[in-house]
Length: 290
Image 1 (cartoon, one colour):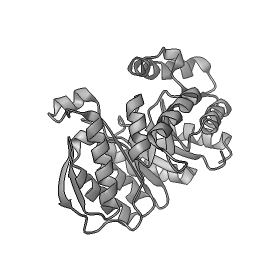
Image 2 (cartoon, rainbow, N blue to C red):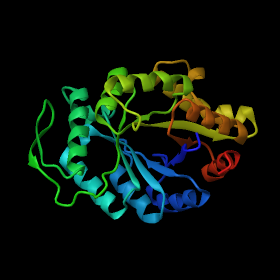
Image 3 (cartoon, rainbow, N blue to C red):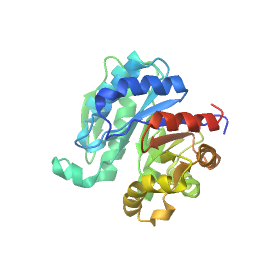
Image 4 (cartoon, helix red, strand yellow):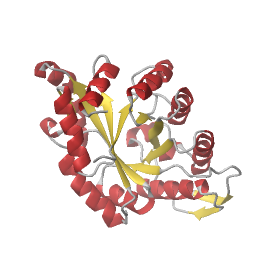
């Protein structure tokens, strides 16, 4: 628990021009990570990560997540290697399936999402290690591709996944697993068991995104969270009241963070909802003793 990292998400709905100042303020408050989002029609994840890295000095920046169907593994490895060389030890690259409907919108939905994700992560990690990659897969073909400037220390590549077979895949091929909002401590036991079944060892990290709203008025907190937990409950296939959040007073929110850490999370990333997100973040960090 003492090594638990605390991160904050730069929400996809926030304008990209606000990212540099937000990243600097978050760094000043003492968070460990800042995570950016890549959803179709919103901001580019790699470019947003570059902006956040360039605006800060020590903050680790995570991409959560780039959809594998949108990215050639060779190009993704090239982009990640560039960032990792300029900003060593400060990048985490999240890769996932992408939302099926969005991938169909742009004509890149794969025949086998599982094969595409496995082949993409395997190829990207090998390229970042400086290897020459020959791959004739179901979805990915690379014929002797090799990076000219691989990073001295490859950044972690984590899988942003939810379903059981994908979690096993993550344990098999990724450096860690990125868990979407709404999952709580009870979920983490099952998630860790599934990644272990895939072959995850003790170094396989678990990063958890969590909806967060901090306030002293329980009704106001509930109103702010409601549209997010309602929609996410439908996506996760669970009742709204079972969608986990980091919320309530600052001390209550800190207890929620501690519970995730005790259940096996290595990093908790707060997706702060409502007004004054930096003030809310500061309150949680203060309650955590940061």
